Length: 597
Picture (cartoon, rainbow, N blue to C red):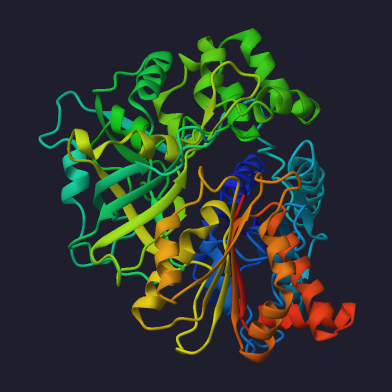
């Protein structure tokens, strides 16, 4: 029987689902199977009816939401008018990636599995439930599931006897070839990047707007443990428009010192220019890379050398290593038996790709340039809640950003790529431009003037609510109730003077929780419980919306618990009825949340 085209479709938010999908693609090619790997929203979903064999790799984000690059697919596949026999010719399997500390663990994968069965698809296997909380990460579930998957697939479509499998130690061909140029191009890659922006289309990931940074100011006291910045951009002439609750995406870059160190370790000349060519038809070059491109631009703007490498990095590096001892160690790290050791070496201390390459110098120095884009993932944009309204600050866009820095057992502190890069930019020293674009966020606010809004935003979670309050006040909507929490009134109380002035004008009612100012810590959920009668009246009698933003770990669950407790105490509801009441608020989008890890 001829091999069918295997299709791997992924929905990925942080890159893990994409990495697993590409691993599936490599393993398929080793088994001589034709395989395409695509993001769900870049695939024409109407063609699913013609696909014989599809593997879906889906992450679950936030409170059980699909990732951004599968939202259009999600809407389509749940259309009520799709016939129940739509996918009766398709064998499928679903690999889910989630975090068991969240209530809706792998919700997207489970729900999609049920839906594909409803549409007539045949499941090759039960859903794989990859779990970030496992000490070995998702691979603990993914590895045995993939073994079962290939047994099933090869039972249907065996490897041709005359070809056999391509052994694990043999590298597959690179996706691209780099053709180095003898002469420098007439226009440098930076100039191409600026002039390549299409003035007619709205800014996007392919064509970001290079926004001048107006100011970059620390808003926490010098005594406070965390450096938090209020950063303002000028978006005049960008074509950008946004509403409260929307998100700005910023494309960061690697530091000059890291770029230089990487080029030294790999023996690359940063000033050399190249053109990129795909090896296979139908594969396009990354839109973000100019053609021709310098090695410096590739490393500083595209390759994520400051990220923690995944297991696939070690698999390919082992294939490319000419050094026996280093190759042996890399093979161990990429094997199922070596995962605990890899976790201790890499994931736990958050060791970066650049640091790993420095630890394996003989291998790093022998990496063919053609494999750079296979080996190292692209730098992903970072999302920030927009903290200002165009009605209050025309032609301006502001963000509130905590600079990520922490210590592990490694000597050098760990630093967030985007926040460290943005914090280092000083518009006072000369013009600074930052590539950005916007997209809708998870929060929307009622347009009816008399509908109140309860906003719960501890820490930097208050950012989208500043935009909302500014927008609503400008439109004459005064039912604004804000619960804000931080550690100390005099150290990290963001926009204190602004909130006080709005309170004085009768435009805002503010409730604060300063967690460290008394012996027992007080958080926003405690304030909600104290103000239970008001919260119940606003929600039940005045039809208020309830919005929540901030850290995803414990706070959303604590706030939900406080609400169900209020519904029981003030509304006289039973436990199950209180849970149903909250679920109804969520279903009608009167309860919304925007949380991040």
